[in-house]
Amino acid sequence: MAVPESSTSRYYRPELDVVRFLAFILVFLSHELPNNQDSRIDSVFKSIAPILYGASRACSFGLSLFFTLSAFLICELLLREREISGTIGIKQFYIRRILRIWPLYYLGLALGVIVALLPGGHHGDLVCMGWFSVFMGGWYCSIHGAIASPMLPLWSISVEEQFYLIAPWAVKTLNRKSLYVFCAVLIFVTNVYLYNLGQTRGSGTAIWFNSFVQFECFAAGILLCLILHGRLPQLTMWQRTLLLTASGLCWFYSCYGLHARFDNFDNPGSWPLIGGYALATSGCILVLVAFLGVSPRLLPKWVIYLGRISYGLYVFHALAAYITGKLLIGHLTSFNSPVYLLKGVTALGLTVLMAALSYCYFETPFLKAKKRHAVIASHPV
Image 1 (spheres, helix red, strand yellow):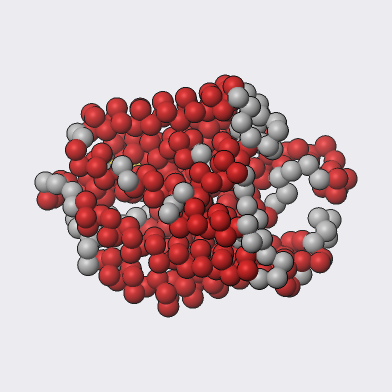
Image 2: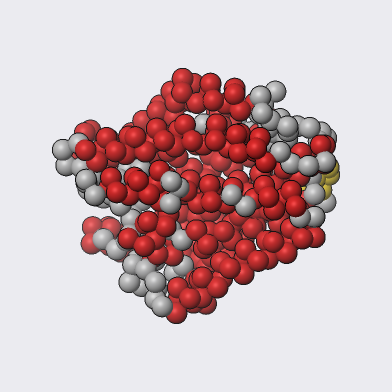
C-alpha cells in the first residue's frame, strides 16, 4: 500500500539523497573495478573472474538509476506545480535547471580542456569538449567512441539536458493519461533503436552513449511518478531488502546473462539488448520503490550529505582517479596487490574532498539563486 505525501508545496525526501549516493558509488565502482578480460585477474580469480566482470559492468547501471531518479523527481515537482498554480512556468523551470547544472558542468569542461592541454594530454579531446559544450557529448561518443578525458562522465549530463528539452512541455500540455502514452512512445523508440543496433551489430559505445537508448530510464521514472500519484510505498524492511536484492539480480543478469553491457565487438543481438536494458530499467524502479518512504531516522546523516553533493561527486570522480593514478600511486596498481584497493580508496577520498569544497564554495551561491525561482520547495528545511 501507499500513503499520500503530506505537503503539496514541498517535496524533499532524504531517502532519495541516499539513492543518489548509491547511484554514484555504483558508477564509481564500474570505473574502478576491472570489467574486461585481463590475464592478471583471470590468474587470481580463475573461474569466478567472469562473475567479477559481470558485476563490475552491472555497476554501470548506477547511471541508469541517476536518469530514472531525475525523471521521477522532475515529473513529481512539475505535477505538483501544475496542481498548485494551474500551469507550469517553463521559463522558471529552465532557470532552475541552468542554475543547478550549468555552473559545475562548464567548470568540469574547463578542467577537461586543461587536462587535454597538459603534457601527455590528448589534444583531440578538445574537439569533443566542443561537442560537450552544446550538450552533444553523448552523440559524439556514440559516433566516434569514448574519449580518454577524465571529463568523459559529463556525456550523461548532455543526455539529461536533451530530456529537459521535452519534459516540462510534456507535463504542461498532457494530462495523466496522455503522459502514459508519452512514456510508452519513449520506451518504443528506445527498443526500436536497440533492435536496430542489435541487427547492425553496433559497438558497445554506440549503444551505451545513445540518448534514445537511455530515454527508457526517463520514461520509467515518469511512469513511477504517475503510478504512485504522490503517495509513498508502505513496505516492511524485509520487503525493501527483497526489492533491493531483486534489483541487483536484474542488473547482474542483464550483464552476465544477456551481455547488454559488452565490449565493442561482442554485440549479443537485438533481443538480448532489448531484454537486458528492460531488466536494467526494472532494477532502477525497484531501487526507488525500495527506498521511497523509508523513515529518515534509519538513514545515516553522512550518507544523506554525500547524496546531496552527489552531482559534484559524479563530475569529479574520474578526475580524482586520473590524479591518483598519474601523480600518486599509479605505478603500484597491480590487480593482485592491496595497493590497488588503496588507489581506489584514495581516489574516492579525493572525490569527496573536491565535491565538498565545490558544494560549499562554488555551487551554494547558485543553489541559493535557484531557490528563489522554485515553486515547489525541494531542499531540506
